[in-house]
Amino acid sequence: MNYNAEQIKEKLKSKLLPQHYDHCVRTAEAAVRMAQAFGVNEEKAYLAGLLHDYARSMSSDELISEAKRLGLGINPVEAAFPYLLHAQVGARLIEIDLGIMDKEIIDAIENHTLGSTSMTPLAKIIYVADMIEPGRPYQGLDALRRIALDDLDEVFREAYIHSLEYLIRVRKLIHPLTVEVWNKLIAKQHV
Image (cartoon, rainbow, N blue to C red; front, side, top):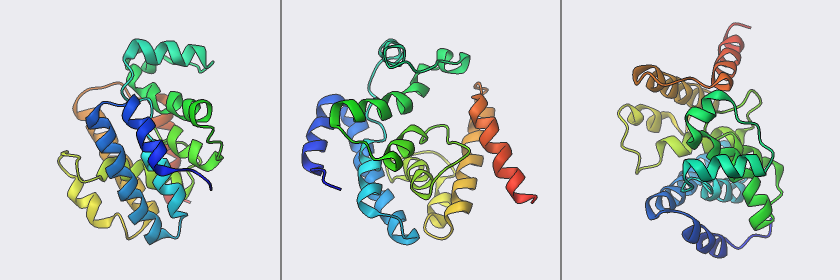
């Protein structure tokens, strides 16, 4: 790979609110630690972690407008909660703005919020690193942080459970893809 991390950080600083930028840096660092533990390319983990929230500071109207411009479908849950579009929009924009075409990195960024039914190890790392980076204040993350370097499939499954429990507890809509991913995770346990 031939990317200049400092130039990418400067671009991120120009696009993101300071709190989103700081979160991206912490996620990249957490992703590298996980990549080291699981034998995943550390450079890709750092870059995907750094860029995973590339579109996170866009307003709801901007995300909807960009999603339409980029030809992305918007389902009813995304229309109700446009921030969910930041992963897909961000994945497309890093291709356009930064010329990053690495499919594994793009997929990891695109799937860091909802997951997918075909998560690569890098995608699972970014999903989990996004949740457990040290700046996250959510209750219950200490247990995830303790197992984050032990078993990638287990920590991803536990992170997904944590996300689902949160959505149910606060009475939010559940994206159809989230249900699909959950059903696949459970089906794998019963095979």
